[in-house]
Amino acid sequence: MPAPPTPPTNRFVAAVFQQLADLTEITGGNRFKVIAFQKVVRVIDDLPQQVAAMDRSLLAKIQGIGAGTAQRIGELLDTGRVADLDALLAQVPPGLIAVLDVPGLGPKTVALLWQQAGVTSLEDLSAKLDTGELESLKGFGKKKIENLKKSLAFAASAGDRVRIGRAHRVATTLIAALRDVPGVEKLEFAGSLRRGKETIGDVDLLAAADPSAAAGIFDAFVAQEAVSEVLLRGDTKCSVRISAGSAPLQVDLRVVAADSFGAALMYFTGSKEHNVKLRERAQAQGMSLNEYALTRDGERVAGTTEEEVFEALGLTWVPPELREDRGEVALAETRSLPALLTLGDVKAELHSHTTASDGSWSIEENALGAAARGFHTVAITDHSKGQAQANGLSIERMLEHIEAVHAVAKKLKGTINVLAGSEVDILADGTMDYPDEILAQLDLVVASPHAALTQEPKKATARLIKAIENPYVSIVGHPTGRIVNRREGLSPDMPALFRAAADCGVALEINANPYRLDLRDSHARMFVHEYGGKLAINTDAHGPDDLDHLRFGVGVARRAGATAHDVVNCLDAEGLASWIASTRR
Ligand code: DGT
Ligand code: CA
Ligand code: CA
Ligand code: ZN
Image 1 (tube, helix red, strand yellow):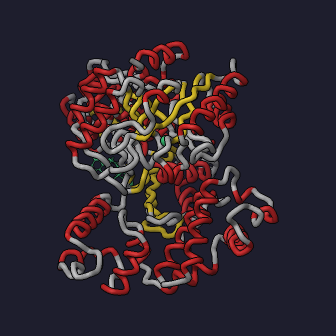
Image 2 (tube, protein in one colour):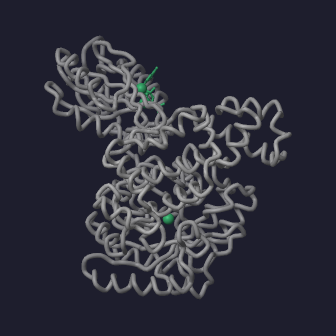
Image 3 (cartoon, helix red, strand yellow):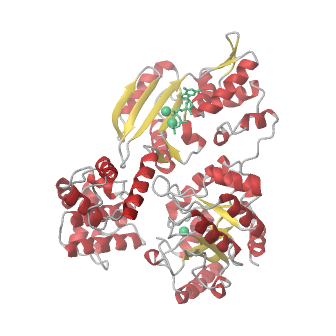
């Protein structure tokens, strides 16, 4: 059980009950208990208010939460643990929990693997898949074994990299805690996190300070509560391990003198390939570049800021997201780098959910949350009928919901434009989950694939193109359905998809949720630069905090070299309205 966030979120509480359900089932516990725990997961997932903020006496009154559950939630909120869960964890091999995380493996199968085949860990499972000894197990046909091998290979290739959402949270928490330590003049993150990559190997922090202050800064660093282990401590560098959450994460903190901060920030931002290009360029100009300074014949030329180093190399400053050696140095030389869009350029949220489907806030809360970000438009896009697990809306409910959204739109006129949309499921064959008559009544249709995400590329291509060609679809949401580090998603013929989207004027979404970031950077780059396509960047917000994910979506778009011109969420209110109209044929 990972350490809980403080206060524990509903998502965390639900995950604890999910584990209670799974482990009860695996250990052969009472079936009714399993069902009750699963019910609690759904109830808590659906709860509009946070349990941590609720009056304890009211907890047990919620439909689906009995006295025993309320007591366990109280225990979790008070102590960060649940005794029943600890007892269950003690009954299974510790390695088995990771097996439960393999996509496609439910508790029933995991129990079977453990009890009948003696599987106790991922390594064990992988070895037994290879030797073929699982083929005699009930329900383990050739196809299931093949799929399991693929899932495992994918999880293994994801390695130990963590999603940018977690790395960013860890980095910003540490920076906030260390900023005011005596001697710290500047403190920023560098490395792949600053470049906005979707996964992060380790977090790199860089401080500007007098060398005499380094020891005190490292003392404060290793004393942070999140730090579980000090891996290395020198005079200028200190590395620690953070163990909150399931996967450990390394953080490197370096301290440099203020007049080296620019050179060091460049060096430790990378990428390595970009650094090599810059060093070669310096050498060709009779200079030398390292993490301390740019020098000529041992004399310092620049180093305090990144800007002065780039300038001394005859280059304009290169945004970190472009520092991947993909032609950015040549563009900086001719002063023709694209003017990348910024967070502040985004003026509309076009994909968000409310309590009508699986969100945790009302239509009005959602709209006011978007307005508070300075947006001129928000589209409420609750799930369509086929998404039963997400409480998707039947046609009747959707028609009522459209009216409810329009009522809020009327009320908030002058504050924010509120569109009655829907995130309509793209069924496996490309048919939309609502008939065209219903789509016609929506102000905006975001079409997204949610199921059948292992279908073969040909089918996936035809499916997505069929959705793009639907006369009411304006945006395709998270086009591949991939989940970072967990699920590969669809692998359509991207050029064919991009051509269709560009021809129909349909925008492809960069879903800003750090679990999705779909389209990914390389695909978005191709779509924009080779097909002239339009991107949408949406947070897919299910509650207020999700709007903070926008920065990750903007980061992906910046890595794609996109400008505000390439992103429909950057249009002004009128421009957006006429763009949506232009996509409906
Ligand atoms: P990561 O941590 O795998 O997500 O990727 P990075 O890019 O953060 O890599 P990391 O943490 O190994 O190093 C941070 C930066 O430091 C890297 O982007 C460039 C620079 N750097 C590290 N080692 C070398 C090196 O051997 N040569 C050069 N030129 N730069 C290096
Ligand atoms: Ca790094
Ligand atoms: Ca590093
Ligand atoms: Zn959604």
